[in-house]
Image (cartoon, rainbow, N blue to C red; front, top):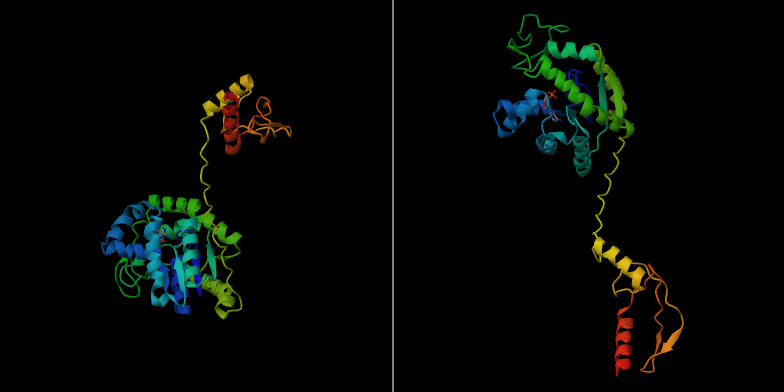
Length: 315
Ligand code: AMP
């Protein structure tokens, strides 16, 4: 099973991803968790990501793609994965398709957890996580027995640094502007499945499992993403024979004198078929007087022959 979980912050992606990962025995890969771990470990990558995370903005694609590329190469990801919080924009989704194409492991589908805005706000502001075992609570809908203490292991509960109202507002705006277009892309490609994310966690899980069952059984095959468009080859710019200023001077000169230099970009009239005998006795095409604006470009051979003709006359 290889899926991407999509949904606004607070839609329950993390909770459902953990349950699905346990059910299918595949890793739950959350870019948010990986970035928070890098930050907690004080790595340079974590420090680079910190400012964007604190502001509720997206961390650069370069950082996130680097993390994901490495994680997908790990041996436990060979049999499948649940991606949570990645991709978050179209560029990340296209890069993911490229990586999975190389690994010959296409996504089964992208699953959108659909949750109303009011429910999202309640979930985000009330969310608490255990520092020790990672258990999640919500002070409004699923409170711990003792305030700020984990029911499972007794460790302190933590309010995520980016779960304050200003940052939540930013995260929701980023979701609207960057992640929603990605949902439309998956829908257009016929790779999107939508699951109602409102209700008890286990009820939502049942909906997810019912939707994923045909993929798990192999009765439904993944739809492959379209191949990337070929990069257009830029045509070499053609060097102009002469500057525009000179071209207009030339056109004027032709009008007045009806003469044309050897190399002219101006279109020429076809030569007249009549011929005259040259001093040397050879027949050459008669030079026809060009109409203004219809001058003939002389070939090098004709030019040489004309010169000879003139020399012969002088003698
Ligand atoms: P999450 O736990 O998924 O809500 O992510 C927390 C924060 O980590 C986000 O607000 C972003 O700053 C950053 N983040 C997580 N995943 C991504 C991603 N795919 N692209 C860019 N930034 C991300």
